[in-house]
Structure formats: structure tokens, C-alpha cells
Image 1 (cartoon, rainbow, N blue to C red):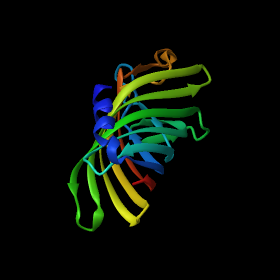
Image 2 (tube, one colour):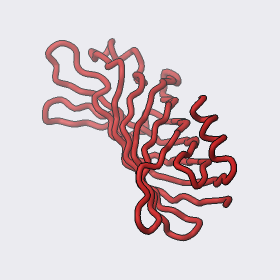
Image 3 (cartoon, rainbow, N blue to C red):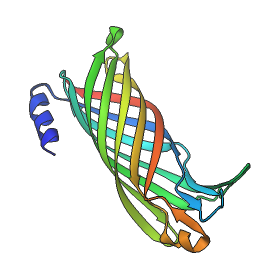
Image 4 (cartoon, rainbow, N blue to C red):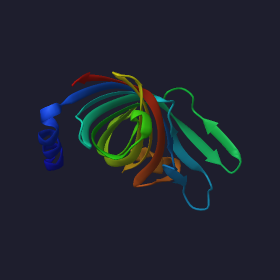
Length: 195
């Protein structure tokens, strides 16, 4: 939080706001494995998540922002060479992030490469109730100008967060991982306001 306040103070004199809409594809590693000698693996599968992003920055190197994402998730069961996906939207996925970004490189033509870090709060809602987990995300973002007030944003991320699947997995013969890891690729448009 202190870092966020420092960034806001440093950038206040020439503040610029940005609002963006992105689509992010996430890939999770195994969330649970079959107990004993079973080779079964269970993991969440998400379609591209719709993400709304709001940012505050300026002409300096730092930006801060918040993001909210939503998607309908399924579960994928993989056992040896066979893979079965629920395909019925078993889980509703919501995620909120508070992100700090720092410019790494300014490219010719006005493009910018940034590094990002964000704590995250994810809500997984399913039949047994909603589960809330905390985590953290690191990423890189490439922002390319389209017009004076419009940008194309491309990003890649890696994240780790708590186990969102219900404890009843153990009753079904699975051993749940305590932490989940995921990779993400996203693209979207960003609209700039201010100086």
C-alpha cells in the first residue's frame, strides 16, 4: 500500500487516467491429483476472461491500477491419454487485482514495455458455495499506440493462489494441491484520459 501511495504522489502533477477492456486466456496446472497410484489430474479450465482495467499514471515510469475479471469455468479430468471436460459452467470465476506497473523500456514509435506485480483476490462460486482465495501475479505488458488516446495492450502473466476447489474432492479420491499456478495471455484496448 505504501508503494501505491508513493506512486500516486509522484505521478499526481501530470496525472493521466486509462480505462481498458481486455480478454485474458488462463491456463492452470493441476489443481488435484488422484490418490494413491492413480494418474488422474483435475484442473479448472476457463474461456477467455473479460477484464475491465482502470489505471492512473503519468509521464513518469510508474502506474497503479485495479482490474476486475469474470468467466464461467469448467473442470477438466485427465487420466492417462483420456481427457474429459465438464462443459457446463460448473464454476463462476471472479477476480480482483490491485496492480503496480513500472516502465522497463520505451520503444521507438511510442510503445512501452512494463513489468507488473499485483496481489489478487479470486472468488470461485459453485454449488457448494463460494470460495475466496488470495494470491499474487507477476507479468509483462507491451502497450502500443493506435491513436493519440487509444492503445493496444498485450500482456503475459504468471500467478499463484490458494486452492479454490471444495474439500469434498478428498471424498471423491483426489488429493488437492494447496496452491495453484497459472499462466495468462491477454490482449485488449486502452483509452487514455487527461494530459
